[in-house]
Length: 249
Image 1 (cartoon, rainbow, N blue to C red):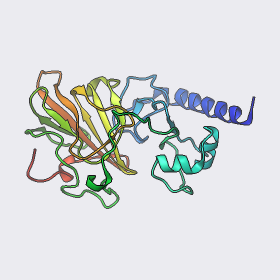
Image 2 (spheres, rainbow, N blue to C red):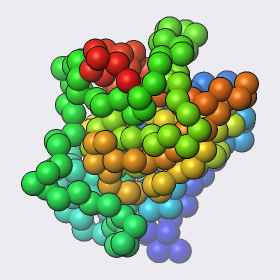
Image 3 (tube, rainbow, N blue to C red):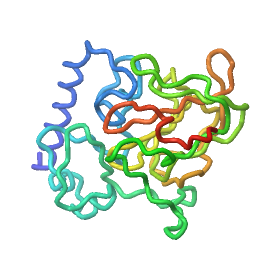
């Protein structure tokens, strides 16, 4: 076995061991690991969605150079795909793109001249940084410990729009309580999630612009047409209303 093969095998065994250790834990949406967890052996939540093809979750002891080498890439390539400097330090649980984005006509890369800059979350909530993903009444507000976001009412088939410029890191139906779900990463500390869509119009890896239609409104378990909208800053759920314009949906 080559050195690269040995390195990847050891990482795989580490991930399996971690999954066994954590098998007795209950993982709730928006858990501490960004976007995904290693082994979705428990009921699926936002914390147990597997890393999609072309991405890698950082393990303890990993470096950007080591990860790039393991996948046969240049460190500058991996850094560039993830918007990082070549000497960046990576953290356990961080999800990195390790293969180039697919070149496809369906991938939307907005022109630089008209694309708003991704929001910067390091300074805390900033009113109006995010755009309302749906025009409609707020049917449920954010309540720490009880709800991780808000529910916005609408009509079936209404367009659901990206709250800010970013990249889709998850688009699928693997989390039953959220229905068809989209998760968008905006910068290193801010992501948004859009649940209960009836139709997903983007896929993992797509670049999206603020205001771009990414899905269509579906209905919750009671038949109410609405979407679940959540914001996570630095690994924690925060009140979306602190980021949205005060004028409402």
